[in-house]
Image 1 (cartoon, rainbow, N blue to C red):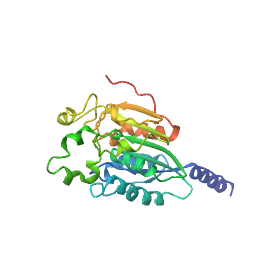
Image 2 (cartoon, rainbow, N blue to C red):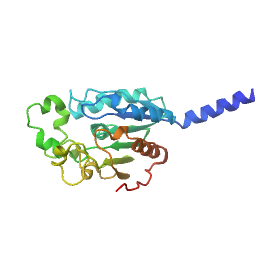
Image 3 (tube, rainbow, N blue to C red):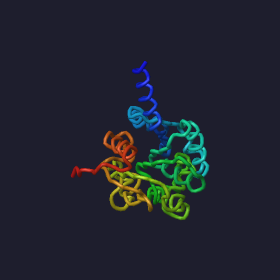
Image 4 (cartoon, rainbow, N blue to C red):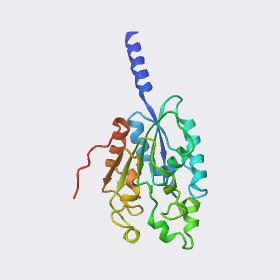
Length: 233
C-alpha cells in the first residue's frame, strides 16, 4: 500500500509540475515538420499539442485565431502554456497576444521568426505564382508597408529566439543583407523586449529538426534560458 501511495504521489507531483507546449509550424508547412520536436518534448514529460493549420489560405490575423484558439483548448486545464514556433508560427503568437490574453502563458521559443519581415518577400511578392504558393500571409511577411510583423510592437511575454546562420539557397541569401538562414536575416529575427537571442549554424528549412536546436528549446523551457553556444567556426 505504501509503495502504491508513494508512486501515486510521485506521478501526481510530476503531472502537477508539467506544462503544455503548443507547436506552430511555418508557412506552407505542416505539423509533420515539427514531429521531431514533438517526440523530444513528449519524452521530456511535456504535454504537446502539434496541430496543423491552413497557412496558405488566410491572412495572419485570421490564422492567429484559427491556429491558436483550438490548440489552447487541447492543453490540459490549469497547465502552464508554452509555445515553440517556426517562422510564421512566431508571428501568429505575436498577433494573437496583441489582442488576447493567455492567463497561464509561460514561455515562447521562436525558431527563425521574421519579426522584422523578410527581404525575400519584398523581392518576390509581385512575381506570378507567389501568392498562389504563399497565400495572403506570405504577402504580409515583407519589410514594407504591408508588413504585419513590424506593426505588432515589442514582446510583453517571455520569449527566447534562435536564429539560423546557414543557408542552402544562395540565390535567396543574396537578397538578404548580412547573415541569414536562407529566408530571414539574423537581425530581423530579433524582437524588442525579447529575453534572449542566440545564433546557431542551421538553416531556416531544417532548424526545427536539428538535435542541437531541439536541446536548446528544451533547455529554455526547463530553465528560462538557452545554454551558451560554442562557436563552430
